Structures are given as structure tokens and as C-alpha cells.
Length: 195
Ligand SMILES: Nc1nc2c(ncn2[C@@H]2O[C@H](COP(=O)(O)OP(=O)(O)O)[C@@H](O)[C@H]2O)c(=O)[nH]1
Ligand SMILES: [Mg+2]
Image (cartoon, rainbow, N blue to C red):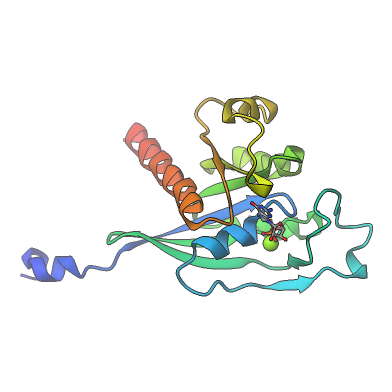
């Protein structure tokens, strides 16, 4: 019987889970998908051009040269049983119409926050809260600096107690992976509670 053959069980395909990487414009979504993905991430970036002038708010992110126009896509294997497919959402307001489609089938999300402009991620937090999609908050410390403890950021963002807040560096694979693992822990805890 196939089901009882341990060699077959060992090669059973892993569960695949769709996760969104969301947050405001320039918070490090593309960077995170790129640092953590084990396949060359699919990027749909366009150079920031005059067309976005006055539309895309570049305040505080003057170093930003490209922007995601559709999505970033990456993959990370967490264990033999679990593979995450990562979808980075476009951050600018003019692309938010895509978020509903991107959210279909997503089990959870990481909302990235730029510690210097936390308000740019309010809309993303609101989006997942309204839809009841579980999320964790990753606080991307630009220049590796974390001036505020996680609890202070939780308060600033008016996040409920159950939402985990993690300080991270989107450029670092390990750090980005830790944020995703915290999300998986959250999803497992939610599932246990519900059953
Ligand atoms: N210094 C620093 N730069 C970062 C960090 N994360 C992202 N960046 C840079 O900030 C800019 C915006 O990041 P990006 O990933 O494109 O943001 P997105 O709009 O959320 O996809 C890019 O130039 C990144 O290289 C970080 O942790 N530290
Ligand atoms: Mg991007």
C-alpha cells in the first residue's frame, strides 16, 4: 500500500503556502524577497521616472532608484514539509487595486515597516486587519539601526497584542527568514486555537 511505504512518505511533496510581503513604498519588500529567496527572484521593477513625480512620495527614500510595478516573487523552503511562496506587493497607492487579487489564497503576510516612516505601512496593516488575514510586522532598520524597541513600535502602530513585532534587516537572509518563521509560528498557533 503506497500510504504505508516510508520511502514514498519521505518524498511526499511539501505543502506550499502563499505569503504576502507588504508595506508602504520603499520599506524593503523587494529587498526582503531577494535576500531570502532560494530561486532568482522574479522582479517586475521599473526605473523610477518622471512619470511618478508628484505621485510616488520619495520623501526619506531618496536613494530608491527602481520600483515594483506588479510584484516580486520568491520561494523559500522552511522544511521538508513546508515551502513558502513569497509575493511582494507593489507599495505605491496607485497600484493598490492589485492587492485584492494578490491576497487570494494567501495564508498570511509580513507587513514591513520602515522605522523612519512607520505611517507608510498603516494602509497595509489596515488591509490585513479588515480581511482577517494573519500578519506579523517586520521593522526594517535602515542602516542596520534600531532606535526603538519593538514594543514602542507596536504602540505607535496601535497593533493589538497578538500581532508579533520583529526587528529585522531586510537585506539579511537570516533576519528575513526569522520574520517568516515567526509568521509560520503565528499561523500554527492560530490553527491550534481554532481547532
Ligand atoms: N540601508 C538600508 N537600505 C535598505 C534596507 N532595505 C532596503 N533598502 C534599500 O531601500 C530601497 C528601497 O527598498 P525596496 O526593497 O526597493 O523597497 P520596496 O518598495 O518596499 O520594494 C532600496 O534602495 C534598497 O536597497 C535596509 O535594511 N537598509
Ligand atoms: Mg518593491
